[in-house]
Amino acid sequence: MVPHRADAEDVLQDVAEILWRKIDQFEEGTRFDQWAYRVARNVMLNYQKKANRQRIRFSDEIARQLADEAVHAAAESRAELEALESCISKLPDAQRDLVRRRYAPGATNRSVAAATDRSESTVSRTLSRIHRALTRCVYLTLGESVPAEAVQ
Image 1 (tube, rainbow, N blue to C red):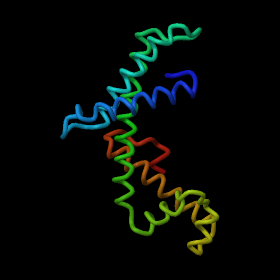
Image 2 (tube, rainbow, N blue to C red):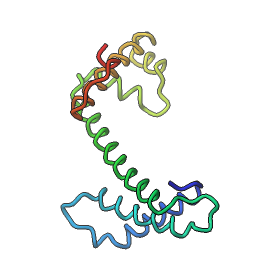
Image 3 (cartoon, one colour):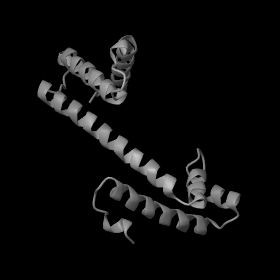
Image 4 (cartoon, one colour):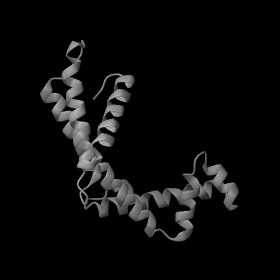
């Protein structure tokens, strides 16, 4: 929603500063992320109003739509992440350990194979099966139909 990285960082800093300054207005027992998204949306809309001098500018309506879509996308991402975490917790210990090892910073299939005394192709095939199982689980957890490639 912000065309330049430096501007995006300024907007983010403004959001953080407002959240910090107004933390006493946050209502205990409500969702912090939704409150923070509303603050971010308002900061974004104010940024768009101030950006009138820029050559390329979103209309107020487009800016509102983009802000609303960003909030919706963030909520969807949160739901997907929660579903994935739930699905990973359901994996057998050995599979969960393999996923943890593979997605550690700097890890590769080769490094996991060496650490687990398996061949690289075995690690690759096993991870592929785990990915399909996790994909199916996430779709089912979210109440969506499972794509054909996740069924195989």
